[in-house]
Amino acid sequence: MRNWLLPEYIEDILPAEALHIETVRRRIIDLLKVHGYQQVSPPLLEYIESLLSGSGSDMNLQMFKVIDQLSGRMMGLRADMTPQVARIDAHLLNCEGITRLCYANSVLHTVPSSLTQTREPFQVGAELYGHIGVESDLEIQQLMLKCLSVTGLDRVHLDLGHVTVFRSIIKNANISLEMEAELFAVLQAKDLSTLREICSGLSKKTYESLLLLTELYGGIEVLNIAKNKLPAHSEITFALDQLEQVSQELKEVVDTIAFDLADLRGYHYHTGMVFAAYTRGCSNAIALGGRYDEIGKAFGRARPATGFSMDLRELARLVEQKSYPHAIRAPYMQKNQALAMKIEQLRSEGHIVIMELPQQPETTMNCDRQLVMQEGDWIIEKI
Image (cartoon, rainbow, N blue to C red; front, side):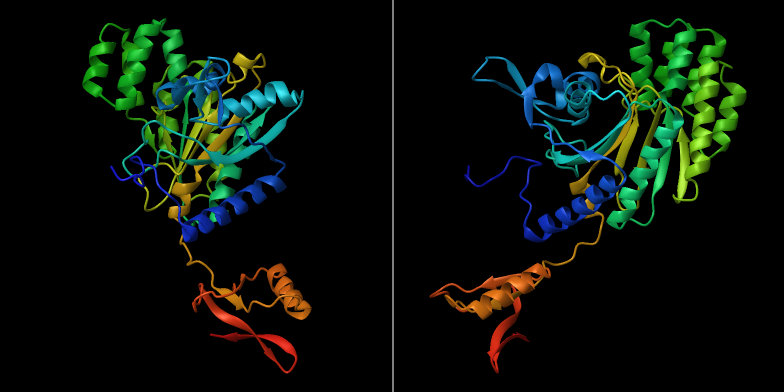
């Protein structure tokens, strides 16, 4: 095997794409900063118990694991940054009020989430801790949409769901944990025949409600059908009202909104509203998020929390990439104060200036201009 080959779904990022990704990252992080979200940078590697707490439990199979040579304990390479940020909120910051945090760094997956995605996503996200109302859900979703907009994406479709609907049906029907797990799996797979088989022994109302969930995808009419046909549990009514309120607030800033009451993504840690953003040219969601009020419980602080994340590498590929900018070539001259000052001036203005080195072969070095001396001044001329 050639020693320069990389593993499957792992790739180098070359200069033009790396600059493009970094430009998008800066736009997003700058936007998050002015909205009050403070950036944190957790370690890539830590003990596995911490990484598998809260939302991390769904990431067990996605996580690379190694033995710590110093302690002998099992360590993991993070597959998701949300548990780490929850740990920071719970133990390092330990604020009593609302905390707004953001992050931008690589995570590693044992297998890609789709045939077109990398095993090394660059995860960017924001999380809000300490507020339980729909207002914070709305803030996070509006912020996610602004982040997508600032990257250059002009058309976004938003899917909204609420795991409380399914949870309420299960709780009020006294369904066992084993059956709940089965129902969750078949609903995710939208396997109607298996769903009918599993539900055959349940009450008529529960049977009809669970089957109805598979059909509750679409526009605002979905909420009306759900209100009329699902059990009149207070939790379900509350969830449907929240979805309607958020959709009314967001309908002017997205192209389309749909509701999916069978969306149980992240069911094991999400506790409320969930959402996913889509755009043209990509079959996968470009951003995901939701409420996860129990995520800090393993760290001793089950604070209310809501947030979103996106893969910056995938997102950047959907935005037009410019070619790497051309540079200005400067001659190699030692102790030439005027030239040095001119170069520093140009660099401070954002120009790329590359100085030649002695005995360097003649090359443009990606330069389309050069500094030349004319009548005692250094000026720029085209090559």
